[in-house]
Length: 435
Image (cartoon, rainbow, N blue to C red; front, side):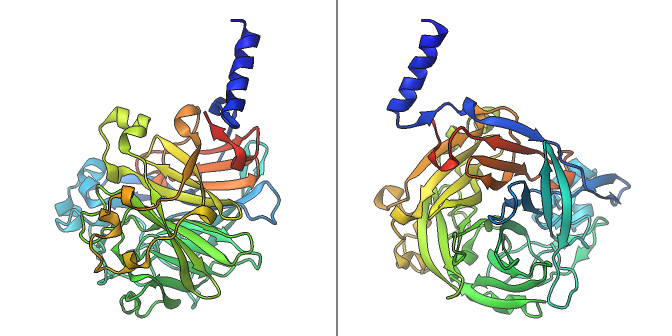
């Protein structure tokens, strides 16, 4: 068959498949991102480590900004699992964490999460502004852990192995949206919760699961118990990582990163059932809850090829609004990332009984075949493209045919650099499907 006929045959097949295409027709442009150094930290035992700002825990392009302007957000700051201390620092958990291998080391406990404004200049990202999160008093917020009793938490240790007090002002920031009035909404993992910020980064209010307010007494922001109590059943460090907003700015949408640990701590491990919530801002309450069914681990090919992966390795790390109630969802392990289109307008809401902790079986342990998960359509898979970063957590839609992706490099703890790419589609992203 001639090259022309072969190409014609492929095109005809794509037409028959209803507009599907080969992901190879997505143009990948590597963006040059400046490193944003923090400082070099010395640890107990003498090891030193240079750290930079991990800019990519979330991203957003505001609809009224120029197409080349976007924002990203950091997470809570540099941290190291106590269980990894010996491998990374040469000092074991006994030395660094008083033997508590389940907690975290915070090399820079003074770090306050940041929102960063960027401008694309050709293939380069230009830093425009850094917005540091503060409380109502104007004092810096923190990335340190909350002293939660309604759900589980973890302790914080310094670079010298000293125990650091819990703080109600700690946020593990992740998702990000911007409003027409200049305010921001963010999502975070500790609660999980969502928070309203002023344009200057001042945290005005934090919306948390019912019953969590008492654990945040003394917080330097207003605490509102507006979220369902069931959200406090999140797996530790798997709270709310993704956040998006309706075009009229009336409704926030967010997904849990993983299935809930409900009714037991291990319930999330084999479950594929993830909850997506719709939160009406004016009413300050959840007005819709939907079921998203995660893929099976063997379908994340690049991750599974390295070692057998488990169901609980899969996460939802980002969600962006395309139009109406149609959204792009980022579902990933690390090296393989899938981008799915969902439409909440045609999705069935979860029965309210599943917000009752007493319901047996819980949503997480219910066979999805007996439920009504939303339909999801694969837009593209990172395995089909070259040059895409691993651990992608931020997506900004610059226009209806262009996405910008950025990874979370964990502040360079393991030596990884920030990676950012621009994807140019031959059609609107909402219309694109991979064959």
